[in-house]
Length: 162
Image 1: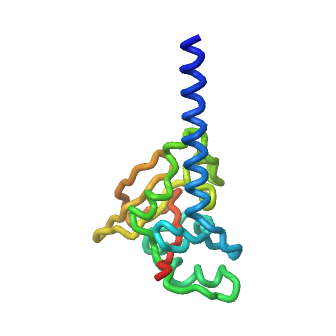
Image 2: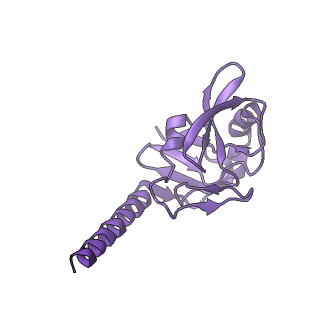
């Protein structure tokens, strides 16, 4: 009887934790209905999806500066940029064990449900001369890669609200 009570209590705690994480995520992110998501915690706006194809760091930098605005109705937002590694880390849902979603490239990722990725390696703005930081939404860690590499690398544009 004591073991059953402990199992039920553990299950309820786990359910409550998942509920709180989901509620927090839904309070934090607001879908603007135009291909963007507002992040009230970081006070930024994210594109709802990545660039949808393999891209090098430099081409990704150009993509966020010159192409993102034209994917939105009326070209109404500017100042798009590559996210910092800390901004990308804030989107990772590693604690939710069943949150992995399969991407177009076949990689399973753990990212907040409001954002869709076509593959799991996202370039960050953090860079050196020939390398830049990449965040993997598959395992939730960062690594350095050559800026010219592009296989499975994507860009997720962000802009400051203030």
